[in-house]
Amino acid sequence: MSLSNDRFWLWCAGACYFAGLVLGTVAVLRERKHSRGLMYLIVVAGYILQTTGLYLRGLEVKGCPIGNQFEIFQFTGWSATTLYLVIGATFRLSLLGYFTSMLSAALALVSLSMPAWDATHRVSIFGGNAWIEFHAALALFSYGVFALLALTSILFLLRHFSLKNKKLDGAFAFLPPIVDLDHISFRLLVAGVVLLAASLGVGSVWWLRDVETVPMTKIVVTAGIWVAYAVALGLRQRGILLAKRLAWVCVALFGAALLSLSTISSHKAALPASHALHPSP
Image (tube, rainbow, N blue to C red; front, side):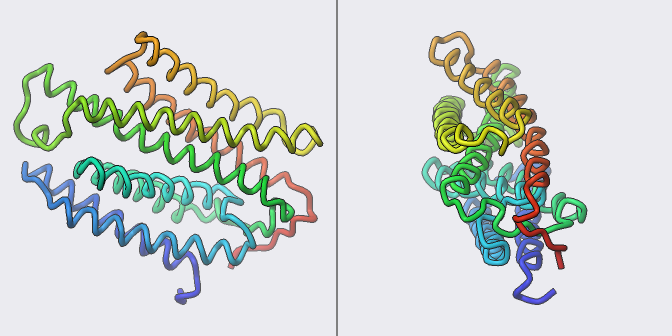
């Protein structure tokens, strides 16, 4: 692969994320705290490489690289990593870097290992309409928020288990305080709901002009994901869905959101022929 090939950079990014995963796993198995600075540096390196790869792909497809399932998974992982680089530095959550590396490595390497997901590069799939492209990118970025929310929810469940069973040594000693995790999860839930609502709002303006442009299945699934998260937020605000139950709900909802990505990519495949499909190199 040449340096101008976007997949070369994306493979390198996946390798960096995997290195972070290995570093964290070894530290956990040895019950030793890994270097927060080193983990952050590894994730930053992977992020830069992935950004370079997505940028090159964007130049090739003449738009935001979210035109097939491969690009959607890559963009979702990139979004989650973007948020971690802000949140991880702010709250000094070293273990969150380990889980972010796990998520990013999984999304990057699995998508790279599935040639069928990247069988075609779709050029200008949004017809040059910046608003529709913004709508799609915002929706996927909100999925990145929900991905990080799922990770913090898993950390919350682990911390809850350690406190309940009085297991405060070993790997559990590295977990962030449960209060910090609760605050972060709430902020991520709010951010995800707001971003996805904004995306749906922008998209609805154009959809109402031509209701035949988007399959009803995609609308129902995407709106359903937003409603589910919005209901969870509402119940959290009313004090009905809290702590452990909220964490489990957030993990389950992200699983559903991840499955819904196939609906988005299938819609892309149904676009008119005027949107120029050509085989991937």
